[in-house]
Image (cartoon, rainbow, N blue to C red; front, side, top):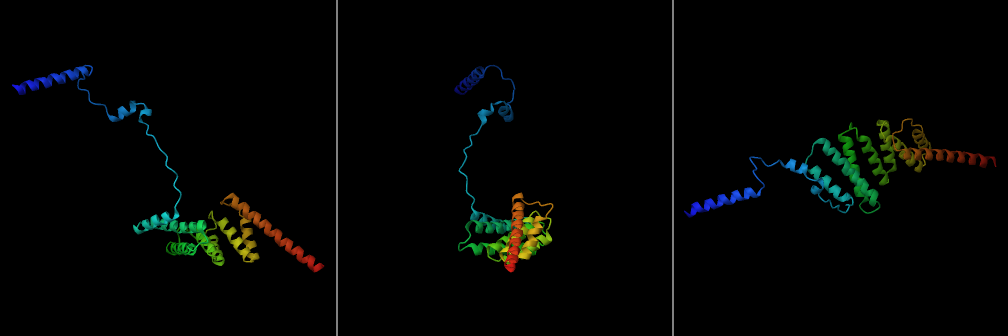
Length: 231
């Protein structure tokens, strides 16, 4: 009897709750979540975004990450790209912190990787950049002659490269510093006469200005020589 009364009370309670719900609900199913979200004011759904402080680039951490990528034995293309970036970061570290006790280590590491890439992938279309970066590392290490040779290889093999103009200019600058004036003049003239230069306009203007100044210096030297002989 008690069990029967309890069941009756529960049924009456449920009927009363249904009445409070505002009438007969029939067999309507609950609306999909997407419908509920669509009908809500977007402002109610906005999630506040708290911006964190900017994180300064960490070249040493980047080196560590690319080392980990290489340890995972990636496919050939991914491996080559990771190696290029690893070498580039070593050169970048020297640019940022050059002159300290680790400069030579970073530059030699970069040069070793670049040379390995050139030997392992001689026809890679990205080798113009590899050669350019190798020349930078050689120059930073004090090997100007080696840098000149590498830049010549770049311009001989990739004359249509966007880096060709910069390579000619850098080579001319190095030759001039080594007092190899005739060769420097030829390199400056190459940049000066490029008809379809794809490099930065600022670099092109710098090369043209340098060439013009070089010509002025040669002319001044010739005039001075003539004057001294005439006197």
